[in-house]
Image 1 (cartoon, rainbow, N blue to C red):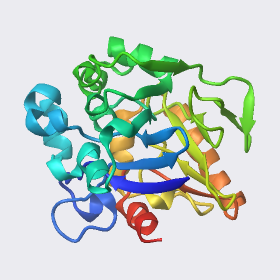
Image 2 (image 1 turned 90 degrees about the vertical axis):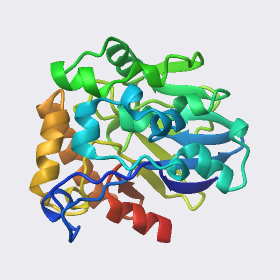
Image 3 (image 1 turned 90 degrees about the horizontal axis):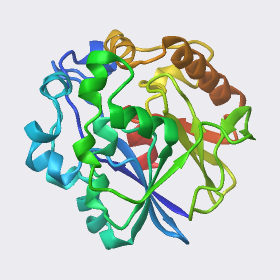
Image 4 (image 1 turned 30 degrees about the horizontal axis):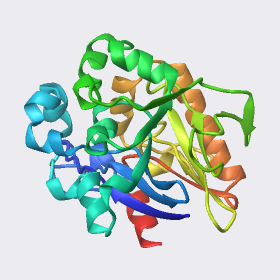
Length: 278
C-alpha cells in the first residue's frame, strides 16, 4: 500500500504560539490531516476534511461559531477531491472513506465521493445524526447536511473483541484489506476512533484523529500542550475522563512501541510536515 498525506483544510484561529505552540504571528496554524491510501480494494480516504460544498457555501454548511473560532481558509485546492485529481487519480476510484468521527472538519468531503462506502463506529453515527453529546457544541459540531445524501454506510461496534497493542480494535472492515483497522478512542466524541494502517515495512501508522491535538502530547513521558489547544480540547470533549485516559494510553504506546509505529493526530502541522517530508 502507498499512503499519501493530505492537508484538507487549513485553520488559522487567533492566538498564534499560545494556541498552537509554534506560530510567530497573531494567528495559529492547524491542518486537517487526512490520508489517501492506495490499496487492492481501490483508493481509501481516512477522513475528508472540508469538502467542495463547504468551500462554496460555508454559511449554509458550517456553524458561524466554528467559522469564527477556527477561521478555516476553505480553499478549493485543499479539498480531498482536488488533491485526488492532482495526484492523477479518478475520484470515482475512491471506494472507501474511513472516518475517525463526524465532526464538521473531518466529514465535509463525504458527498464529494458518491461511490465510496463510509466506515464509522455505530455510536458516532447515532449521536451525530441526533446531534447529541455536549449540548451547545454538538448542535454546532455535527452538520448532517454534510452526509445526508450518503447511503452506503458500514457501522461498527466500539469493540468487537479483537485486541491491538492493548487497545480494543475493529478488524475486518467491510471490503477493506486486513492491514487497516479502527481503534476506538472515545472522549472527544462518544464514537471517536483512531485508524491504524500496517505499512509494507511492517511498522504501523496510527492516525489518532482528535484524541490529542499537539505533538508534545505523545512521544515522551510528560505531556506538553499549549494553553489554546488545552482549552479547545476541553471545549470539544464529551467525556473528559475518557479523553484524558485514552490520551495517556496513547502517550504510553508512543513511548513503549516507538520502534513499531508512528502516531500522529489530525491537526498538528509539525507532525503533518514531518510525514509529508519523510
